[in-house]
Every structure is written in structure tokens, then in C-alpha cells.
Length: 166
Image: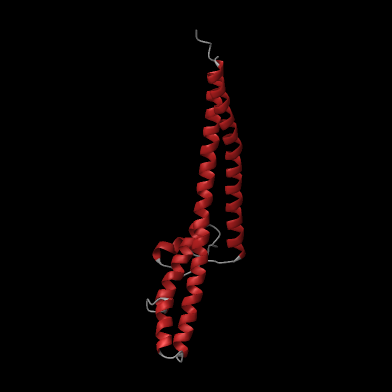
């Protein structure tokens, strides 16, 4: 085997070994992240109401919010409730109305507080949902990186096992 071929084989083997080391770390970190999201959501003790849910959420009645998809569903429920309470107006729109009254309308002030709290909770739940997707991506990439690493190591071994050509 010539030195260039040997060097290429070592390079492929080294890259493969590095990927074989990195892939399981990514899988582990993704699983740990997913566990942390579940723990943090469960600590909030958010549960879907037993009744009065829209038809597309009815199957979640009484269930706790402990996963990214459930956090997203609950965020949608909050969005609907806030829109109903504010007649579809946003926090910014209500604030503008309140300022137009000289900040002297108690009902608008309470409505602004309702919109603020609802949108804050909704934003937190959507962040959990996004983090859930990131953990999925990290775990998928970890699996792909591990597979690629194994393929590169196997390729390097196969190249090293080839008979020498004249």
C-alpha cells in the first residue's frame, strides 16, 4: 500500500472514530434535554380542562402538559382564550387604547394584564415546544453521525484490507 493510500485510510478511520464518539454524545444530550423539558413542564402542573375543549383538543381532556406537542396544544388553547377575552385585540392594541384614555380605564388595564399574562404563558409553552423539536433534531443527527462514523471506520478497514496492486 502506498503512503498516500495509507494516509487516506488513516484519515477516514480517524474521522469515522471521531463521529462514532460524537454521535452517542449527541444522542445522550438530546435525551437529557427531552427529560429536562418533561420535568420542567410537569413541575408547572398544567392540565387540560376536563370539559369545554375545542373538538381538536377533546382527546387531551384531563391530561397533563408534559411534552412538547402538548405544550403547543395548550398554547393554542391559551391563544383562543385570550382572543376571546380581548375580542381579538393584541396586548399592544389594548395598551394603545389604554394610553388613549390617559391610562384611566380600569377595565382596559385589567384586559391588558389578561393579555399580557396569557401571551407570556403562551410564549413559554411555545419555547418548550421548540426545544422539544431541537432535541428531536439533535437525537436524529446523533444517530446519523453514529451511522456515518461506523460506515467510515468500516470503509477504512476495507481499504486497508485490499491487496496491494502492482
